[in-house]
Length: 255
Image 1 (cartoon, rainbow, N blue to C red):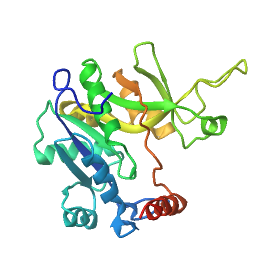
Image 2 (cartoon, one colour):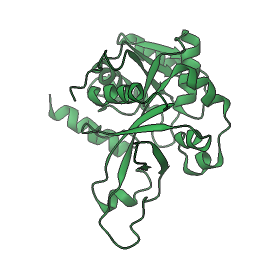
Image 3 (cartoon, helix red, strand yellow):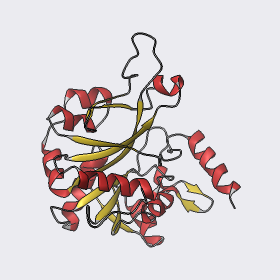
Image 4 (cartoon, rainbow, N blue to C red):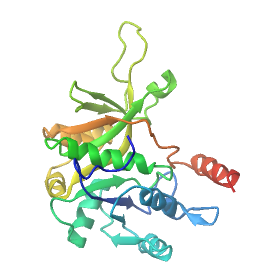
C-alpha cells in the first residue's frame, strides 16, 4: 500500500507518544542525546513522517516536556503513576479535550525508527475493522533465537486477523518439530478516544501482570484487537546502553 490513509475508507488520526523519565535499564531515556538531538525528537520526527494531523508527547516529566517544546513539538504533562503508555495517553486526551471518536495511534517513546508508513497502516487497520477496539501490527519471526527471546513478544491471530493471544513465550509451539511459523508483535497501537476510558476503567488482569503486556487486559475482557502483518517493520528500539550506542553509530554513519 502507499502508506497514506484513504479518505474514502478511513479518516484522520493523531499520534500520541507516551514518554516517561524513569527507566530501570536506561534512566532519562527520552532525553539521552544522539548526534545533538534528544531521543524523543527522533521519535517525534518519525511520527511527523506519517499523515497524522497532530503529534503529542504525553510525559510525566517537565524536563521532557521542555525538550519537546524546545524543538517545536507539542507536549502534555500527565501523572507519574501510570503503569502503561495507554493509561498515560488516556489522561492526555482528556486534558486536551480530544473528541471521543478520534483515532489515536500510540507510538512508543523509545522507537526512533518507527516508519511513517506503518503508523498510517495501523490507523487504517482500525478504520477497516469497526468491531475492533484496538489495532496493532506484526511481522514474521526471522529465526529460532528471536522465537525464544522473552524480550520479543509473539502474537497468534485467528482466520479474520484478530489477536488470539500475545506472549513472551515461544508461541505457537511446534510440537512435531515443524518449521517455525510465528509472528513478532510490534508495539504500536491505534484506538478510538472513547475506548480509552473503558480501558482505564478495567483493572489490570493477572495475565497482564504476569506477562507485563498491557494489550492482554483487552483480550481478558473480551475486546477485539485487529492485527496487520506489515512490510514496514521498525528498526531498533532503545532499551539499553548497547541499543543507544548502536543507534548512535547508525546515525553518525549517515552524516
